[in-house]
Image (cartoon, rainbow, N blue to C red; front, top):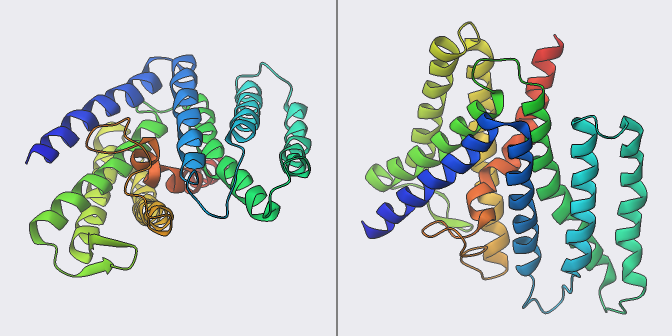
Amino acid sequence: MNNLVQRTITGTLFAIVVLGSILWDPYAQAIVFSVFMVLGLLEFYNLFNEHSVVEVSKEIGIFIGLFIFSLLVGVSFEWLPIISILFIFPLFFTLILAELWRQTPHPLINMSVLVFGIIYIVIPFFLTIDLNLRNTSYLPSVVGMYLLIWTNDTFAYLTGRLIGKTKLFERISPKKTWEGTIGGVLFTLLVGYIIGAFVNRGDEVFWVISAIIIAPCAIYGDLLESLFKRSLNIKDSGNILPGHGGILDRFDAALFAIPFFYCWAMIYEYF
Protein backbone atom coordinates (compact mmCIF):
# COMPACT_ATOMS: atom_id res chain seq x y z
CA MET A 1 0.00 0.00 0.00
CA ASN A 2 2.84 2.41 0.85
CA ASN A 3 4.45 1.71 -2.51
CA LEU A 4 1.14 2.31 -4.32
CA VAL A 5 0.69 5.67 -2.55
CA GLN A 6 4.26 6.65 -3.39
CA ARG A 7 3.78 5.62 -7.03
CA THR A 8 0.55 7.60 -7.22
CA ILE A 9 2.05 10.81 -5.82
CA THR A 10 5.16 10.59 -7.98
CA GLY A 11 3.13 9.67 -11.07
CA THR A 12 0.75 12.59 -10.53
CA LEU A 13 3.57 15.13 -10.16
CA PHE A 14 5.34 13.63 -13.16
CA ALA A 15 2.18 13.88 -15.29
CA ILE A 16 1.71 17.53 -14.25
CA VAL A 17 5.25 18.38 -15.36
CA VAL A 18 4.97 16.50 -18.67
CA LEU A 19 1.46 17.60 -19.66
CA GLY A 20 1.88 21.06 -18.17
CA SER A 21 4.95 21.78 -20.30
CA ILE A 22 3.18 20.52 -23.44
CA LEU A 23 0.04 22.59 -22.83
CA TRP A 24 1.85 25.69 -21.60
CA ASP A 25 4.24 26.43 -24.45
CA PRO A 26 6.36 24.55 -27.04
CA TYR A 27 9.48 26.22 -25.66
CA ALA A 28 8.65 24.98 -22.15
CA GLN A 29 8.16 21.47 -23.53
CA ALA A 30 11.49 21.66 -25.37
CA ILE A 31 13.30 22.61 -22.15
CA VAL A 32 11.59 19.99 -19.98
CA PHE A 33 11.98 17.21 -22.54
CA SER A 34 15.62 18.06 -23.19
CA VAL A 35 16.27 17.55 -19.46
CA PHE A 36 14.43 14.22 -19.55
CA MET A 37 16.38 13.24 -22.66
CA VAL A 38 19.78 13.96 -21.12
CA LEU A 39 18.84 12.16 -17.89
CA GLY A 40 17.54 9.22 -19.93
CA LEU A 41 20.77 8.99 -21.93
CA LEU A 42 22.82 9.15 -18.74
CA GLU A 43 20.73 6.38 -17.16
CA PHE A 44 21.01 4.23 -20.26
CA TYR A 45 24.79 4.45 -20.43
CA ASN A 46 25.06 4.00 -16.65
CA LEU A 47 23.34 0.62 -17.03
CA PHE A 48 26.67 -0.66 -18.38
CA ASN A 49 28.90 0.72 -15.60
CA GLU A 50 29.54 -2.72 -14.14
CA HIS A 51 29.39 -4.66 -17.39
CA SER A 52 32.34 -6.95 -18.04
CA VAL A 53 32.38 -6.36 -21.81
CA VAL A 54 30.73 -3.04 -22.68
CA GLU A 55 32.83 0.07 -22.00
CA VAL A 56 30.89 3.03 -23.34
CA SER A 57 32.04 6.63 -23.21
CA LYS A 58 28.88 8.19 -21.84
CA GLU A 59 30.34 11.69 -22.10
CA ILE A 60 30.71 11.30 -25.87
CA GLY A 61 27.28 9.68 -26.19
CA ILE A 62 25.53 12.43 -24.22
CA PHE A 63 27.39 15.22 -26.06
CA ILE A 64 26.58 13.86 -29.53
CA GLY A 65 23.04 12.96 -28.46
CA LEU A 66 22.38 16.46 -27.14
CA PHE A 67 23.92 17.98 -30.27
CA ILE A 68 21.67 15.89 -32.55
CA PHE A 69 18.63 16.65 -30.38
CA SER A 70 19.36 20.40 -30.53
CA LEU A 71 19.83 20.20 -34.29
CA LEU A 72 16.50 18.44 -34.84
CA VAL A 73 14.62 20.74 -32.45
CA GLY A 74 16.20 23.78 -34.11
CA VAL A 75 14.89 22.63 -37.49
CA SER A 76 11.40 21.97 -36.06
CA PHE A 77 11.26 25.45 -34.52
CA GLU A 78 12.61 26.85 -37.83
CA TRP A 79 15.64 28.31 -36.12
CA LEU A 80 17.80 26.32 -38.52
CA PRO A 81 17.29 25.47 -42.21
CA ILE A 82 16.10 21.92 -42.89
CA ILE A 83 19.37 21.15 -44.67
CA SER A 84 21.02 21.25 -41.22
CA ILE A 85 19.70 17.70 -40.69
CA LEU A 86 22.48 16.52 -43.01
CA PHE A 87 24.98 17.13 -40.19
CA ILE A 88 23.47 14.21 -38.30
CA PHE A 89 25.20 11.70 -40.57
CA PRO A 90 28.79 12.89 -39.97
CA LEU A 91 27.96 13.21 -36.26
CA PHE A 92 27.06 9.53 -36.10
CA PHE A 93 30.31 8.61 -37.83
CA THR A 94 32.22 10.87 -35.44
CA LEU A 95 30.60 8.96 -32.58
CA ILE A 96 31.81 5.69 -34.07
CA LEU A 97 35.33 6.90 -34.90
CA ALA A 98 35.90 7.90 -31.27
CA GLU A 99 36.55 4.20 -30.57
CA LEU A 100 39.80 4.40 -32.56
CA TRP A 101 41.49 6.25 -29.71
CA ARG A 102 39.93 4.44 -26.76
CA GLN A 103 41.77 1.12 -27.24
CA THR A 104 39.01 -1.03 -25.78
CA PRO A 105 38.83 -4.79 -26.43
CA HIS A 106 35.28 -4.74 -27.85
CA PRO A 107 34.89 -1.59 -29.99
CA LEU A 108 32.02 -2.93 -32.12
CA ILE A 109 29.88 -3.63 -29.07
CA ASN A 110 30.72 -0.22 -27.59
CA MET A 111 29.79 1.55 -30.83
CA SER A 112 26.52 -0.36 -31.06
CA VAL A 113 25.52 0.59 -27.51
CA LEU A 114 26.42 4.26 -28.04
CA VAL A 115 24.46 4.56 -31.29
CA PHE A 116 21.50 2.55 -30.01
CA GLY A 117 21.23 4.81 -26.95
CA ILE A 118 20.83 7.86 -29.19
CA ILE A 119 18.28 6.20 -31.49
CA TYR A 120 16.33 4.72 -28.58
CA ILE A 121 16.15 7.89 -26.48
CA VAL A 122 16.92 11.03 -28.48
CA ILE A 123 14.64 10.37 -31.47
CA PRO A 124 11.40 9.68 -29.50
CA PHE A 125 11.83 12.77 -27.31
CA PHE A 126 12.39 14.90 -30.38
CA LEU A 127 9.34 13.45 -32.16
CA THR A 128 7.05 14.54 -29.31
CA ILE A 129 8.26 18.13 -29.67
CA ASP A 130 7.88 18.10 -33.44
CA LEU A 131 4.41 16.58 -33.20
CA ASN A 132 3.29 19.21 -30.70
CA LEU A 133 4.45 21.99 -33.02
CA ARG A 134 2.19 20.53 -35.72
CA ASN A 135 -0.84 20.40 -33.42
CA THR A 136 -4.16 21.78 -34.69
CA SER A 137 -6.58 19.99 -32.33
CA TYR A 138 -8.36 21.19 -29.21
CA LEU A 139 -6.53 18.53 -27.22
CA PRO A 140 -2.93 18.30 -28.49
CA SER A 141 -2.24 14.91 -30.03
CA VAL A 142 0.87 14.53 -27.85
CA VAL A 143 -1.27 14.93 -24.73
CA GLY A 144 -3.75 12.35 -26.03
CA MET A 145 -0.87 10.01 -26.81
CA TYR A 146 0.51 10.21 -23.27
CA LEU A 147 -2.96 9.75 -21.79
CA LEU A 148 -3.34 6.52 -23.77
CA ILE A 149 0.13 5.29 -22.84
CA TRP A 150 -0.42 6.00 -19.15
CA THR A 151 -3.92 4.52 -19.25
CA ASN A 152 -2.51 1.28 -20.60
CA ASP A 153 0.29 1.26 -18.03
CA THR A 154 -1.95 2.12 -15.07
CA PHE A 155 -4.83 -0.24 -15.78
CA ALA A 156 -2.53 -3.11 -16.78
CA TYR A 157 -0.89 -2.70 -13.36
CA LEU A 158 -4.19 -2.41 -11.45
CA THR A 159 -5.96 -5.21 -13.32
CA GLY A 160 -2.93 -7.44 -12.91
CA ARG A 161 -2.86 -6.74 -9.17
CA LEU A 162 -6.57 -7.54 -8.83
CA ILE A 163 -7.14 -10.57 -11.05
CA GLY A 164 -3.83 -11.39 -12.72
CA LYS A 165 -2.88 -15.07 -12.69
CA THR A 166 -1.59 -16.10 -16.12
CA LYS A 167 1.99 -14.96 -16.74
CA LEU A 168 2.53 -12.92 -19.91
CA PHE A 169 6.30 -13.21 -20.35
CA GLU A 170 7.68 -14.73 -17.17
CA ARG A 171 11.25 -15.03 -18.47
CA ILE A 172 11.50 -11.24 -18.90
CA SER A 173 8.90 -9.76 -16.55
CA PRO A 174 7.55 -12.21 -13.94
CA LYS A 175 4.88 -9.85 -12.56
CA LYS A 176 3.10 -9.09 -15.84
CA THR A 177 -0.01 -11.15 -16.60
CA TRP A 178 -2.32 -11.70 -19.54
CA GLU A 179 -5.25 -10.47 -17.46
CA GLY A 180 -3.45 -7.22 -16.70
CA THR A 181 -2.42 -6.80 -20.33
CA ILE A 182 -5.97 -7.30 -21.61
CA GLY A 183 -7.32 -4.92 -18.95
CA GLY A 184 -4.83 -2.25 -20.01
CA VAL A 185 -5.72 -2.64 -23.70
CA LEU A 186 -9.48 -2.45 -23.07
CA PHE A 187 -9.25 0.68 -20.94
CA THR A 188 -6.90 2.27 -23.50
CA LEU A 189 -9.49 1.67 -26.23
CA LEU A 190 -12.17 3.17 -24.01
CA VAL A 191 -10.14 6.31 -23.32
CA GLY A 192 -9.27 6.58 -27.01
CA TYR A 193 -12.96 6.56 -27.90
CA ILE A 194 -13.75 9.13 -25.18
CA ILE A 195 -11.06 11.50 -26.49
CA GLY A 196 -12.36 11.21 -30.05
CA ALA A 197 -16.06 11.41 -29.19
CA PHE A 198 -16.16 14.01 -26.41
CA VAL A 199 -12.88 16.00 -26.47
CA ASN A 200 -11.60 16.19 -30.05
CA ARG A 201 -15.07 15.61 -31.46
CA GLY A 202 -15.26 13.87 -34.80
CA ASP A 203 -11.88 12.18 -34.41
CA GLU A 204 -13.18 8.86 -33.06
CA VAL A 205 -11.54 6.86 -35.86
CA PHE A 206 -8.17 8.52 -35.36
CA TRP A 207 -8.12 8.02 -31.59
CA VAL A 208 -9.49 4.48 -31.55
CA ILE A 209 -6.86 3.43 -34.10
CA SER A 210 -4.29 5.34 -32.05
CA ALA A 211 -5.29 3.27 -29.02
CA ILE A 212 -4.99 0.08 -31.08
CA ILE A 213 -1.46 1.13 -32.09
CA ILE A 214 -0.31 2.51 -28.74
CA ALA A 215 -1.48 -0.30 -26.44
CA PRO A 216 0.70 -3.10 -27.90
CA CYS A 217 3.61 -0.69 -28.50
CA ALA A 218 3.50 0.39 -24.85
CA ILE A 219 3.51 -3.25 -23.77
CA TYR A 220 6.49 -4.05 -26.00
CA GLY A 221 8.32 -0.95 -24.79
CA ASP A 222 7.85 -2.03 -21.18
CA LEU A 223 9.03 -5.55 -21.97
CA LEU A 224 12.03 -4.25 -23.91
CA GLU A 225 13.33 -2.25 -20.99
CA SER A 226 12.65 -5.19 -18.68
CA LEU A 227 14.79 -7.28 -21.03
CA PHE A 228 17.62 -4.74 -20.79
CA LYS A 229 17.52 -4.66 -16.99
CA ARG A 230 17.16 -8.41 -16.58
CA SER A 231 20.10 -9.10 -18.91
CA LEU A 232 22.19 -6.64 -16.89
CA ASN A 233 20.83 -7.86 -13.51
CA ILE A 234 19.51 -4.39 -12.63
CA LYS A 235 16.17 -3.68 -10.91
CA ASP A 236 15.65 -0.01 -11.88
CA SER A 237 17.36 2.28 -14.39
CA GLY A 238 17.70 4.93 -11.67
CA ASN A 239 16.14 6.31 -8.48
CA ILE A 240 15.19 9.86 -9.44
CA LEU A 241 11.44 9.07 -9.33
CA PRO A 242 10.38 7.50 -5.98
CA GLY A 243 8.22 4.44 -6.49
CA HIS A 244 8.96 4.32 -10.21
CA GLY A 245 12.75 4.21 -10.45
CA GLY A 246 14.45 6.25 -13.13
CA ILE A 247 13.49 8.27 -16.20
CA LEU A 248 13.73 5.19 -18.43
CA ASP A 249 11.47 3.24 -16.06
CA ARG A 250 8.80 5.92 -16.49
CA PHE A 251 9.28 6.48 -20.23
CA ASP A 252 9.90 2.86 -21.25
CA ALA A 253 6.46 2.38 -22.84
CA ALA A 254 6.51 5.83 -24.42
CA LEU A 255 9.92 5.46 -26.06
CA PHE A 256 8.66 2.52 -28.11
CA ALA A 257 5.15 3.86 -28.75
CA ILE A 258 6.08 7.41 -29.82
CA PRO A 259 7.63 6.59 -33.24
CA PHE A 260 4.64 4.42 -34.19
CA PHE A 261 2.10 7.04 -33.09
CA TYR A 262 4.07 9.78 -34.87
CA CYS A 263 4.00 7.83 -38.15
CA TRP A 264 0.26 7.17 -37.78
CA ALA A 265 -0.45 10.85 -37.02
CA MET A 266 1.55 11.97 -40.08
CA ILE A 267 -0.19 9.45 -42.34
CA TYR A 268 -3.63 10.48 -41.03
CA GLU A 269 -2.82 14.16 -41.54
CA TYR A 270 -1.52 13.52 -45.05
CA PHE A 271 -4.65 11.72 -46.22
